[in-house]
Image (cartoon, rainbow, N blue to C red; front, side, top):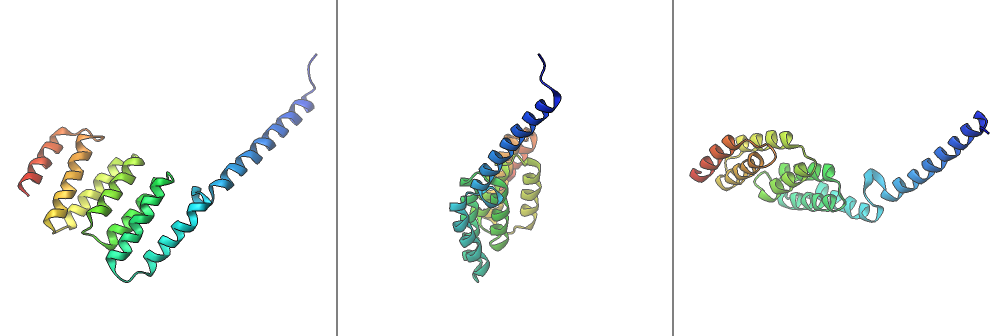
Length: 161
């Protein structure tokens, strides 16, 4: 005995409604932009502190803390955004570079990271920061980009720097 098509359609509609309600509940518990609501207030406070800061180092520290928090809640896209803001606030900060590298590697945005590191290297005149950038590029070429020739050349350049 077959069920009438109206009964099948009705059962399917009920199943979809229950799935939609469950999905909304899960998404609502994650809060705005996928950040849990208990961490959202802390993140908002850090962003306000960074925007209100007058000293570049203080602003960069607040953005770096926001990036760290975003990585903790598994939002590397937000972490990359905050790390980039920290780098703009304090261009000589190796901590900002490290946070940016971690976030973009977590997103598997290797080519974007490569372009960003090359651009930062071209803009940088501080020798220790240039060496740090070269080491990050070597790590990128030895790792996910798998370009051993560039890695070797940059390693030589970093050793003479």
